[in-house]
Length: 434
Image (cartoon, rainbow, N blue to C red; front, side):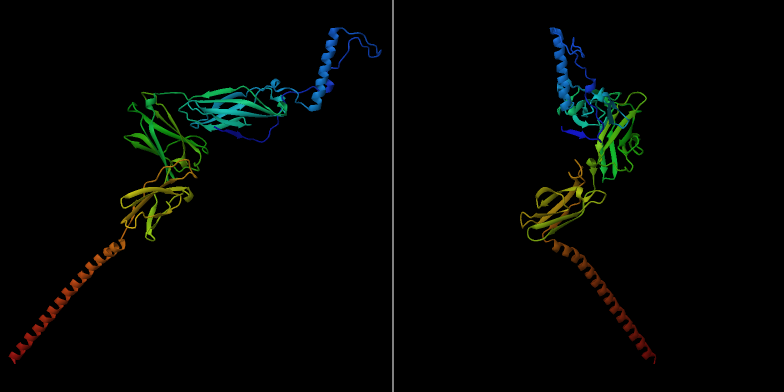
């Protein structure tokens, strides 16, 4: 696990120690010496030891004056851990504040840079997250189904430590939510899908062993909201809340999305469940449509489809293509909405493909595959089938028209013949009368 540094504008620093000015240093005084007389007397061993000590102090003062305030060895420099280290829950369903106060006696460290190394994790995690910062607080998300532990110490670097690093002891803190209810009362099989990067829907299954009057409620929060909100549109089954349809979410992408599902019952306590999602990792888009397959020559085939409609940028898709040549099927992926493939045999009679898509690694850490598109096929001699498809109905229509025409013509001839025969009879009758 790498170490993350958090930087802030430079603050005033305080030295780890101070030196008395030369005017404040003790002045050596030789016992038995008269300032006016200029006469000296023989000193005993104790007096000589005191003189030697005073000379050593004077020598140290001269060295420190010449080389600045770096005369103390690292072993003599110590720094205290931060004060009042605590983990605070502001009610954001897992987004916690870690905060502390500067260590004691930092007023003596103006010539040093003071930083804090913070380590934290959920209690059952093997890895610590490490942050180095100059701030007095840090915020991050945690799984509140488990406990949280953190530790911090002070780092001192700079001229006052002769360029090396001095570390304080660790200060530690832990945080747990108040446990209530049996584990069996929690909801399970929580499933959230962000459909087409527009509509979020979550569903769950009821806890086992809960009483008939138990019902569940969902609360959610993400950075940008003033406080946690409750679901306003529950999905129900048998009168129980088993899911939530979320309203339009304002800029929730690439942020942790915190959910808590708790319950209520008059006869038992219900254990709450906590979840953290990144919405771009649970996006399920619409499948591609308008597939086309073009055989350009004897063996090269162009497969193409439309980019799914919606707010997802085209650069965020990866496509999976399932291609079938007669009885042989293979799968490939591409970042484009077009691909060229080659036939394995010029004698293949049928080529088919279908496509699905999801978010790629450039826009999310994970994604949910869409449904498969409709299948698009090409068959050898398909133009003949198409021709027959149109010709056969046309032939039937033509034959039908011819039959109708023949019938009409026949009836018309019969009618004319009958009219002519009638006229002949009328004419013969007139001749007889005459």
